[in-house]
Length: 292
Length: 292
Image 1 (tube, rainbow over the protein chains, first blue to last red):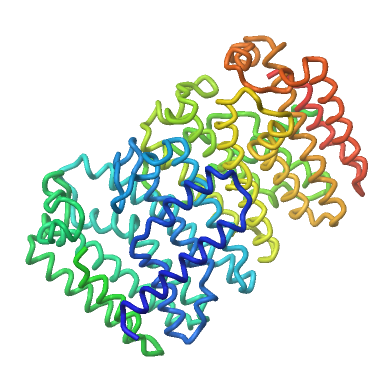
Image 2: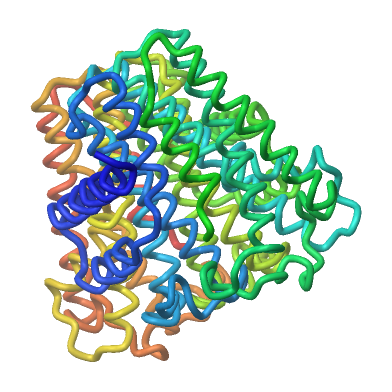
């Protein structure tokens, strides 16, 4: 089986899980429609894929990751809905379709985001795991998504956009929280689900950390050199917006070198695992070699 | 000790707990400021008071309810921040101070709400309880606050405001989810924290249900007959806004009768408990006799 087959299989698994979990909950029709609209909007489903990749690495069934995968994508989706709001990025389109508040209305979009976030935590309580493992997964999910993780990173990113003197250290800290924290969580939760050793859990977190930074550097590089039609936004938009990026701070060549370093560190973390993990290497190469 | 002393003691306990829990978490200063601004805005702290009243009823320390009380008030506060947004109720003032988005900005208010909601779930994982009890409390908290509870009720309330044919059944269903669900949760979580029997837990939930409806009917009655200065909003504002209320559907006398029925049912639930619960009767009378 090749990488695309794996990704498609994992994509189908998480999409089915989300649909079942939303369908099994009683809620107003308009709220369900708004939540489903954004959940069904597609995307790469990278976070759930990482959970599934860890489970397959340890020979476990995908079913075991059902709630973690679905709740991860629900929280990622809520963050996109809120980010698109007029008061935030004010985007009319997401993945070629009207954003949630354009398709419904702003109030509905705010509430759909709130419901996705709240329901994500509830869904985790249904996991077929020991109560101790459930509590631990909810704890690290809350840390990754909340004030010290994604939301905090998003706020610092907003503040940084107004400044012209953002350092490499600050840029890294913003990305580590805004996008990196949920990626690291995906791998750590996968490790808990798979019953991996403490050492493997640590290596998987390290892998996630380097993967996250590589992901962001690649994003920034694509904005400079990518093909406009493929990435679906105007190339050079970061420069136009005077956004601080890796190429801006390091130059394009410097950014490519930094990317190589992160990829090597990620590979080293994989090689330190007690089991071979070709699927995780595939995910790494997917993230780095993607052209959008 | 009288009712006001109890309420003040519980208010101080939850305010201290929230401050400690927010202070112990690393996050951007502006995010902390925005979260603390609304958490410190005061209010009656009725939900935490219900948790503490149950604990004292069973002779337990307030300390045991620390995380449940704080997370309840954090979720209540996030819902107020998001409700006040321009796209929702568009309020400039809350408890005599600028609303969160007026004091900071809309984006910060959205993120402060998101962070309060996320951190509330994380805080519950720190409770000094068995993992099984923690998972159960998180499960019922998610049900009460999410798509099938508060958020769903809020969305249906928005839709109902545009209609002139809302039935008593619909009105009840909206209130049961929008405000009732968190009140019932406060009582049920209190029961779990106190190690109450299954029967007592059921009676406490029933008490919460009737207390919640009584609370709402009293709110609606106060809008008709209350003293403008005491309740701090224009009396008769519901009628001006053509809002469906208990007095509108039942007449003022009918609403008062319905209130009496709920109070009696709430008292009956208390009397069915295996222990005397004067503090819960005090809370009931506080809710019904309040003039704002």
